Length: 138
Image 1 (cartoon, rainbow, N blue to C red):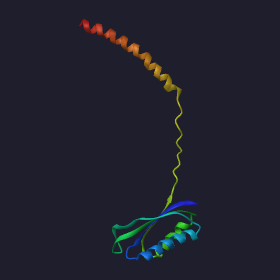
Image 2 (cartoon, one colour):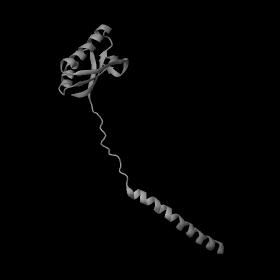
Image 3 (cartoon, one colour):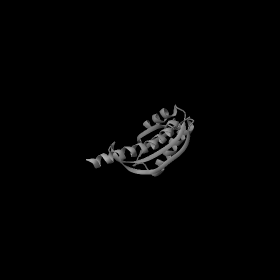
Image 4 (cartoon, rainbow, N blue to C red):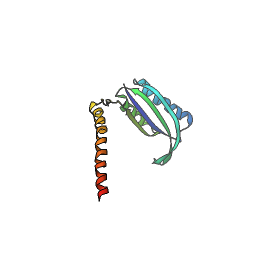
């Protein structure tokens, strides 16, 4: 079973009892077709739309997270499209992020490079001492 997110916008002209009934109907549709509802989130509530849909400027947002077989989203979209109280809907498949990154191995070459820098320090000091008398002679 795949995980999905469904968000749909209900017309605000619908009464509260009818809105609750529509939300239950959508949840029942998911459950009856072999789906398993994880969460129904109505906390978004009534919001202003970005643009007018059928001359309506506000909508009631509902977010549903569920697990279902691959055929269910098409059936769900078909039913939401028929319902005149649903202004817009979107079903998205959630992809679990897997990390294929392996940790970097410790390279012995990096450890050997550090002592080479320490050996270079006396050579730099000797070169600086040779340059100092030449600068004094001028």
